[in-house]
Length: 248
Figure 1 (cartoon, rainbow, N blue to C red):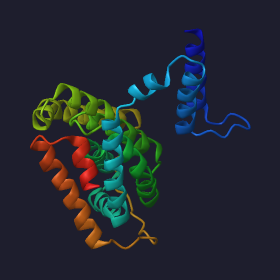
Figure 2: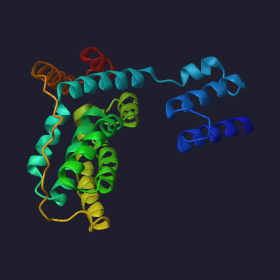
Figure 3: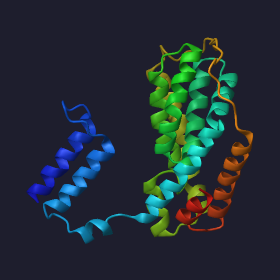
Figure 4: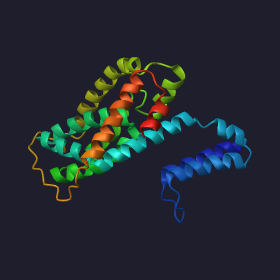
């Protein structure tokens, strides 16, 4: 028990600190190292370690990340970036659009993936609008978590609940979507209140993006079709890991 606690604490130190002198271990590597030590020191047997892995979740996450990677390659998120900038007249509008777009995307593409994909976009958007990025990055982190709660595919925790409880996709969404949307509204007002000096109703001037990449229309259509089919099959009760991997 003492060895397990020591390994647990050391693993979290590696994950949290990241900048230990002369130790170049990323978060995934630190997590894997902790798991290996649990087996190496006999706290878990290899069979027990295998049984602790839920391959349904891993397959689902892999499938979704492949689909989202193609969406990014197709130029989908750049289209979303330009749309938000066209609609955002000021910092307050931008915050509102960011919170609800990231919340909605996270309910479909998973919160972890959206934070990974949208962080560079938020930085580019705030740079083009001449705004400080910190309030908007905090908005992305919080709204992606809030938005992901509305579906069983929004995050791995919901996925576990959906798989083992067998709650239908649409029933899960119907119960949690109103709660999640209410949370997004609260998130908007709280962040706007805390950062009221940075987030104002003054008009912002958008700087044109000189490094705009070309949208791949064919790949965009295929990727959006895959997402549409994903939602249709999940609504019909098909297995989420199987659907995600087949479409990927």
